[in-house]
Every structure is written in C-alpha cells, then in structure tokens.
Amino acid sequence: MLKRSITLKGHRTSIALEPEFWQALEKLAAAENRSLPSLVYDIDRARLKKQPPPGLASAIRVHILDKAARPD
Image (cartoon, rainbow, N blue to C red; front, side, top):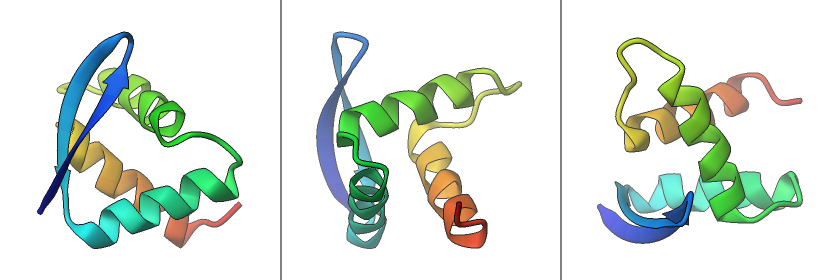
C-alpha cells in the first residue's frame, strides 16, 4: 500500500492504495486532462450519493475498474 495525501474541499485527506491503482488513477487523470485532486474530488462526490457510502479508497478502485471495463 502506498499512502498519499490529497486536498479535497480544502481539507487534506490520506488515501492508501496499491501502487498499481495510483498509476491507473494518474493515467486516468492525464487521459481526461485534469489534475489528480480534481478526479478524486469527483469520485468522492459520487460515492457520497450512495447509501451507505463506500470508503474513498474503495470508491477509487471501483471507479478505475469501471473505466477499464467501459472506456469512453
């Protein structure tokens, strides 16, 4: 696991993901021409709409797998 801190909504949050997921997330952000915090912010907003909301790291992993299964 690799832990990184990202600022979301003005607050620092730590996220622990496997290095492969960080690499995939960085590639996804680059492909969408956006910053990593911007992408994580959108994933965070989407996860909070679910009941019960999953953890942020889990939501990131699912988002990455979703994008891999359904490339736009």
